[in-house]
Length: 543
Image (cartoon, rainbow, N blue to C red; front, top):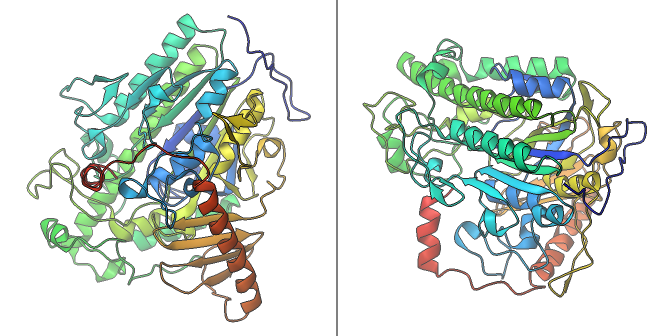
């Protein structure tokens, strides 16, 4: 098979040159906490991801967007979600969940890679406008109904063909099954071409569903409670050199981001919606809460097992050495508590198909150790992600840390640089605006700074901006807080009163970027959006 016209030139000085452009595997977890993985201080068994970290790199200051669909837009376009109408922009129409249709100048990463000779595969969650096969993917396993029930095949499709329900169906395993199948076909039919594989697990997003054998491993792990688990994770993170700041206290008055009081009643008297000290819970509540976290751990454990199967396939087809694997989470762990899908049967075994449980703010706080807040907030707990990079042929370092701040918007420019792919100056008659994403290819060689002027966040009114080590952050309709992340990534000491000029300076940059974003989002027409009724119906089925 003929190589792409734009030949690959290894851009990392000092690394051994390779004869072909790298394969790329981007793995996304869903609602994974910063310290859930063993290689980021967690107690959950994640040997395959830990091995990738040991054989590659861990980024300590990587960021997402605090929510599922904006993060996926960032990964696949290289822009902030608001710039491509995939999260709310004031004054601009949007679809359900504030998700609109991308401008014509914002195709997905796969379009550029296909032009450079790559084949593209997708397995798992989608959450981008359009369908994968209409966006330059050659195969796609798309999770639909699996979002609300991990044991049900309904809504999940392989190139549009519905999955068949089996007695042992589990969507995390099905995701890996399809990944392995696509890679096997690639090896058999397209071995001369590089590939891009976008592997998007729904684990460990609620509901808490996991095979009993996986849950059994953790039955006795979490009885000590979320406070002790958080402290143990924090100690390991410090020992690893990943963090140096103090551990912020759990915010006992901060509950789920959305109130569903009727759902809370369905979950029974042992459920709690605040991260109160573990010692204040009754014995029955402690048992219930410990059992929930055991299921969450099992979901992460099973995801790691399935990643191991994909890695084994890469090795079997001789692609492992020249495959860049990137692993991240779309947001921090979630404090959400709700009942969706088929509902919750209190009499059903916890973690089974008829149950619908969420970890809640207590365990979410522990999962997001050593940071504050959760998914949807843009404090560090909502936006910090583990980021692992592994590429034996292209990364000489083994087990090193990278301290420079990076963001999911940086994935696309990094991949394109390494693949030798180019973005044209004009797409569909529209000039392509400069992307805020910056390649971190040089950081794969040594711990250099990824040169952002700033990083910017807005989600449901929560907003933040980081410039250097300074960060301003505010709750929806709240005042700006100011933190020096060089010494306080835990966001414990608000310096806004001491440095009002710095707050004004950073606020002006945040506002200027918002204004530019509004103009950018208006710069090309979009297709007509669904009706409000259709948006509401779709939103009820999706995260």
